[in-house]
Length: 465
Image (tube, rainbow, N blue to C red; front, side, top):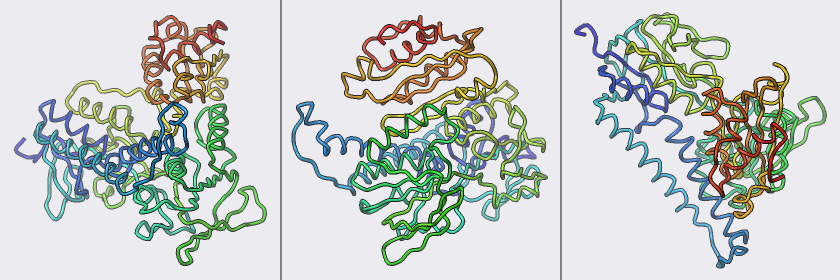
């Protein structure tokens, strides 16, 4: 150990990095984590998952009251938007959670090295002019917003912004254009729609939410339109100019056709994310990235260079915080000589709109390509708890192998879809069948009974439809 400063040095303190560091320390390894932000937690806790959920929740409550939905429940009164207070509670949530990670670092004796790390060799990095040597180095640098050619993002001006800037708008825009119909764009677009903005979503593809089950994507589009969001599908943005306090976007059909101009108060560019590898000097460690800018890894998260590991958004796979967390635990256990495994076939994905959209496993399209299947569906409007709560939009869909009945995929649109999907993921992790879910007693009345009914529908025997 005398030759090394640390057993494990983690670069990045996002959901993957901080979890890897804590787990490594728990396993008795001398551990440090390099982070350049003023607070720990990476994109997720600082400007991503957590603050966006704070705004989603607050905007949902405002919309319920302002639209008269609460009045129908006998809760009357007028409300007004205090946007600065809404922002303040978001910032307070972030402060509490990032501070919590700092506490956990101290509790577990993880050293926080503040600054940016760059490799100087296969087992050494430089941070602010100081060299650190570690027996194992974990790359957990996450991802950042993918830029769109022809559009310059300037969050300070609050006219053309990315997801970080969209969380800090000082006023509700009259018209917001969201470029990209993926998860982040739909979540943040729905926030500002509920707070009073007109929202237009421009998507290059012919459907929103790429990668999700086709039927779920179509049903979600219907619900978003019902909520007042406008969509321009099969449309690409070719340029954007700022004149005064307005943005003017030039768009045209992605299949070819005449261009048109859209005027907006705010443009949110949300076309995806890309791995953060710039500045790491990977070449000095003998590493290179693939064609998508990712660090290639083996099943145990080791790279081609012994002693260097990688996890999270910087490696192949879905860019999801919970995937990175599981990988953080697994890589630490592998470094410690244990067996850390992540089943990448069962990684749930959630869109935190209202209702939430969640899925795990194969889509119906993917499952049919692999063989014969059976599909069971159940509408949320037939679920007693959802109906009582006036949350009848959505459905549950269970996809099972026709011969073995093993569950291959589950897709949910429901107010509690993100919570409900956990049961499906766990059932699939244990190789469960639709019958296993169908004959598991579910509490009544709960939203999760819809999953039970959809599982029963696989065999053609739902009770309540």
